[in-house]
View (cartoon, helix red, strand yellow):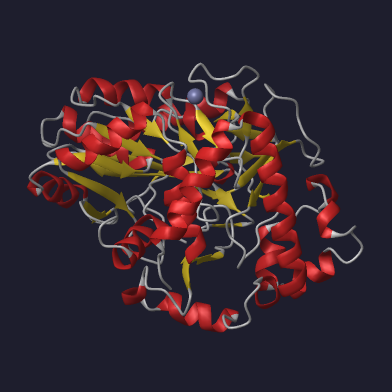
Amino acid sequence: MRFSLPKALGYFIGGLWTVWGGRKRIEAKQLRNLRRLVEKARRDSPLFRRLYADLRPSSEIELHDLPVTCKPDLMREFDDWLTIRSLPLDRARDHLQDIRKVGVPIDDVAIFRTSGTSGEPAIIVLPSSFVEYSFGVSMAHFDRHQWKLAREMRERGMRVTITGGNGHFAGVGFNKLVRDLQPRLGKGLDFIEAEQPIGEIIEQLNAIAKVSCIVTYPSMLTILVKEKEAGRLHIEPVVISTGGETLTSELRERVLRAFPSLKYGIVDAYGCTECLVMSFVCSHGRKHVHEDWVILEAVDEAMQPVPDGSLSATVLLTVLANDVQPFIRYDLGDRLRFYKDPCPCGSPFRSFQVEGRQATLVRVGNVTLSPLVFDLEHENARRIQLVQTSHRGFEVRMDLAEGATAGPVFQEVIESVKRVFRDNGLDDVTVRESKAAPEITASGKFHEVLPLRSGSRQTTT
Ligand SMILES: [Zn+2]
């Protein structure tokens, strides 16, 4: 696997040309890319050859001709899914089991796994063209504000990613891959494992001479902001980049107050392992889709498009820059809403808001609750977790603050959780104290609420 600068430059120039042509050129480019990918998938992926057998010729295909695909079906037929025959599932799994090989390519491709917070983990295979696209197209879509930010980040110190280090996750693996393929692009990047005790994470951050940027999940940011408020964390980044979970406006405001150095605020990106570079955040804080290479469809439960301005039931993703593992109308499970009006930044790319990641919703009987309704904050606890252990049973786990007594803290938190259930008509839910420590997922996310999964509680996968 190698990174080709001329090819990345090709994506860059192509990206600029597309932007200059406005909507008409973007849509034409998207359709050309889609038809090319469909043709390749039909030719080289036995699974897609079967799936598309009765469809019209690739040169006439439209997006809505294509059936929706989903993770369990694709993963079940992994060996037939890829357009290369040299990476059967067993070989991919062997590679993923060796922790020393995180971000190390296997032949001409890189492989990562998803965290599996919404079910079975998927194995994601990326060709070098995807890495070239990631840099070339992102830069082509930068506005003046983003160029300034990128320069300042480089000049002001290290960009530190805090995420799970316990597996082949893209959070750390992609940076390592890029650093090995093209050392110049990977300069100034550092990584801290999210699984460590909070005290150690803070110590490592404080030991870095200058931190210009933190990249992490909102759940980790919740912990960092508490440490900053308590005066234990000393870093002064100019920007914080979050992703992977919902960033609430409360957390955003609290972080901006605690870190006055945040000249560029918080950039809340939306991506996933299936498509690491899917959208960009503009100077007005909106997320715009890289539509020449990525298609996001907001759809209802019947997989029919919802109008702009309405919240979708799920979203379908098509990745036009990965022709080794085709993701075409792939059901991601997240809910989003496209803006009706054009963005004041002037970008021709459509913009959207993400309103809920499926992985964290709690279901009790017929009631579905967002994890955000629970107040899992206490001045005497460093972090608190509510775990659903059965259909109507929950337990509270916590890391106490130094010198705090467990009893009264548990009592107050349990009372507040029970109040939320009662307010939602759920009187027969039990909530008890647990001696276990809060868990974080294998990919390093800390979910304040861990819902029950398919009959048994999901552990740290
Ligand atoms: Zn914008």
